[in-house]
Length: 573
Ligand code: NOJ
View (cartoon, rainbow, N blue to C red):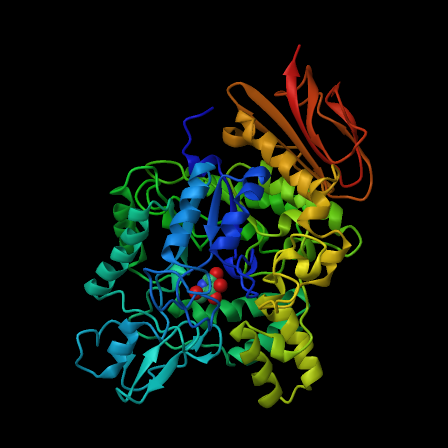
């Protein structure tokens, strides 16, 4: 269809392994479960999977604290089960990328255990050690960034929790060890990596203190209370100021180039996507990362036509500026770290309609699309009610800090914690209306509670046979994207760029032009594209519409229904 690489046209689907499918009935997702669901994923039409970490881990940060980079967490299965999963995925033409956490390991990783054992062991310099805390840096999860280790009578640095010590990437042995780990999985045939938190790998060598007049817990409280535009601006400034010396420092581009060279040793277009929105990590377009996420698109209270337009204009212009090859966009609206799309971008009155508009957006904008497991059935955030249920350590730290240090009443503290913890968007996947949503057997106790709305149609089984369900809508959108050269590869041409209520654009390839209209308003709108040079004198042929009445062909002037998603091919003659 075009000479694009697989990862450019792909729809990726993020699996959060702990919450996807429990194959052995212990209340935790695993590879057996994931393998059993591959036919479902293949039917959904996705091309690739991104697995959040599946490595052994003490799970202080739900797998993002890795204690062995070259094996599988026992609760998820064995290496053989992983290999089977990979082979079965590939058999269905589904590629698999893994999560590579470079910045830090678990404090239970043998590298750290050795490093902290003495000041002169062979790995003494594999982490960031100092005699006394040199500044007021914060861990972005829980308080001070420097933690004392009695064995060495020294402090180590951690950008995240104290159970996640930062590696010292200035040490060539660290690089070697990590590249070897990457090769281990590449040798097994994985198709690439999502790179965790790359911006945090290096720190300001001068160790410059931050200048924010509060600590992290206070900043979180300040952020919760910030409501006016001035306060919101101040909050953003503080967050930036607090972490700017611990983030995006020199050395990253050289490092990304080295890792890219490792991937390029392999055939099969292995790829890297960075958990960062900075296009600079794509280097000259061919020597660093293949993709970085367009996070600015989702960094907003509300997805509005004006926001999308501004985002696309800035983003696409910057991608075009790379010096050797143009960069390729990569769009997403959700992942395991943030409130679910349905909840976050809903308005509590039209959540279902807005969810359809937003999924159409991600699947029709120019670029690779990333979906998060459960969004295709409209899973929503689930608010925990008791601190004993909280598994996200960032949440429990916050609860205890505001109760003990700020005197917040436990009931209120729990409500705030439920809002801020990432547990709300990580609850088990809903496969059916049966007990435990079919995620685990009825008698199992699932690792996080199941959101009870699985009984109200928010589950795969109920939506599967219903032609009007969100699930079938996703299937349809993915199918038309796959059969359309314009949607996969075409240029992006925004139309009628002053409209506040709707977002309209064309995707145009050599042999196809597709019009997309997303009406974000609750009113029907008369639209007229008869003077749009690319599609005047054409007839529109519907590829997808959320308005059931729309079928067949019609001229490019029509009435778009309230919240309508319309995707149509422009046909000449
Ligand atoms: C980003 C991951 O997405 C998040 O879940 C994790 O807590 C941090 N990086 C630390 O690894």
